[in-house]
Amino acid sequence: MVSEWQFEVPTAGSKRLPPDGRYMEALSSQGYGFDAAIADLVDNSIDAGAENVVIHFLRDGDRLVSLVIVDDGKGMDEEELDIAMTVGGRRGYDKRSLGMFGTGLKSASLSHADSVTVVSRTKRTRPVGRRWLMEHAKQGFQCDIIDPDFAQDFVDFYQGRPIGFQGTVVRWDGVKDFPKHGGGGQTDRYLHRTVNKLGLHLGLCLHRFLARDDFHITISVQDVRTGVEYANYGVEALDPFGYPVPGDSTYPSTFTADVPALGPVSLRAHIWPPRSSLDEYKAFGAVVEKEGFYFYRNDRLVQAGGWNNFRQPEQHLALARVAVDLPDDPEGNVFRLTVKKEGVQASPEFVSVLDGAEDDLGRTFAGYLSDAERVYREARKRAGVTRRAVVPPGRGMDPQVRQVVEEELPLLDHEEPLQFRWQKLPNDRFFEVDQEAHVLLLNQHYRAALLGGRNDGPNDAPMVKSLMYLLMQDAFQRERMGSRLKDNIELWQSVLVAAARSELDRMAD
Image 1 (cartoon, rainbow, N blue to C red):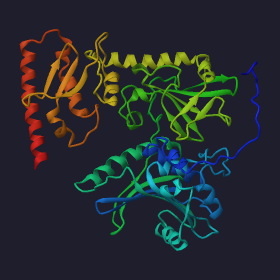
Image 2 (cartoon, one colour; image 1 turned 135 degrees about the horizontal axis):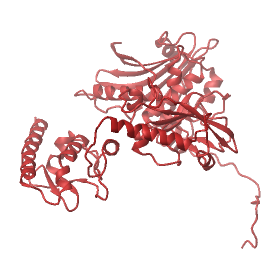
Image 3 (cartoon, rainbow, N blue to C red; image 1 turned 120 degrees about the vertical axis):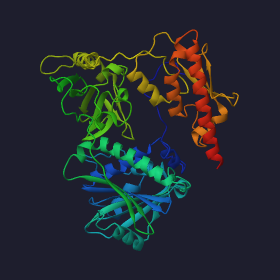
C-alpha cells in the first residue's frame, strides 16, 4: 500500500515490445471514408511537388478491377520508398508539408483495399516498387518487393499521363467499395455517384491548390482490355467562401483572438448572401452543418464547418463561415489535427477567448454572429414567406432529411417527433396512422419493393418517408381527422398500394 502520493513513478528497467502483426488491421480500421482516403494520397502528391494528379478507375467490362492514383511529382528512390511504406516511417516533413504522421498512405489505402502497390522513379533512378498485401502484413509486416521489369512497365503505362521524367503510381487492388457484381448497370451507377462525390470532396478540401494555374486533378475511367476511356473529369475548386457579393457589405472582416499559449489567431469572418444556390454553399451537405469554422493547415482545408464546442449549430447562423489558418503549433497544445485530416480538436483555451476577439472596427466576434443571424432573418422577412410550422421529424427519418427539414421549416414547440416504423399490415393498406403515439406505420410487405431488395436499416426509403411526412402533417396536428382528410388518406392509400404492387411485379419479372 502506498503511504503517500508519489509525483514520479519509479521504474526498474525497460523491455522492447514490438507490435503484433494484427496492428496493421487496427491501422486500417480508423474509419477512413473513401473520399478522405483518396484525399490523403493526393496530399502526398502535393508534398512531392506534383502539378498533375490522375485518379484512375480501371474496369474490365462491367467489373471494376483497380484504382490508381498517379502523379508527376519528384518521385522516390528505393530508400525513400522503403521509408514511405514503413508504418510511422519518418521522413523530412517541412513546415509546409501536408503529411504529418507517417501512416496516411498505409492506413488510408488498406482501409479500402486488400493490397496497395507503390511504384516510383526519380530523374536519376530506375522505377522501384513495394506492395503491402494485408495478409502478409498481418503475418509480421512483410512488404513485397515489386519485380523491376513490372515496375518499369507500370511507369511506362502512365508515361505522359501524367508521368514525365519522374513520378509515383499508387495502385489499390481488391477495393472493398467496388460493386461485387457489375451487371445490370451497377458499375455505371456506382461510378456516377462516386466520381461526383469524390470530385466535390477534393474540390472542397484542396480548393486553394486547384485555384492555382500549376495544379490539376483529373478523374478518369478506362477499360483495361480495350483501352477505351469512358470518362475524364477535371476537378474544379469549390471555394466555401466563393460568393459573388457578401450578405453584409461590412464583411468579410478579420477578428483577432489572443490565445495565451499560442499568441494571436486570425479569424476571417464571412457572411454568405441569403438563399444562395451556388455549389460552393450547398453542394456538400446540409448548410447547418457547414456553418462555423473552416480550419486550414498549409492551405489544405482540414475542417469544413462546426463550432468546436463554442456553441451549437442553428439554422439562423447558416450564413456564418469563419476561415482560420492554423498557426504553427507542433506540440498540439491548442489545435490538434485528426489523423484523417477531417477535423480539428481545439482546446478550451481557444474557445474561451473567442468572445473577446475583435476586428479593426472594434466589433466583437459575438457581434459578428448577431450580424449573420440578422442578415438571415431579414432575408426571410423580405421574401414575405411565412412557412407553416410542422411536427418535428423523428426516428426512422434519414438524418440528412431531418436536418434539411429543420433548416427550412419552423418546428412546432412541445410536439412529439413524428416517427416511422415498418410493421405487418393488411396488404390493401400502405400505411396506418397512430396519432396518439405519433407514429406512421408503413407496410412491411412492400418494403423490399421500395428498397429494390436492399436492407438499409431503420432510416431507409428516405424519398417515400419524406413525401409521407409532408403529406401527413394535418393528420398529426389535429386531434380529430375531418371527413375531407380521411377521404384524402384513403385516396393516398389506393394510389400508393397500386404503385407498390407495380414495383413488386417488376421485381418478379
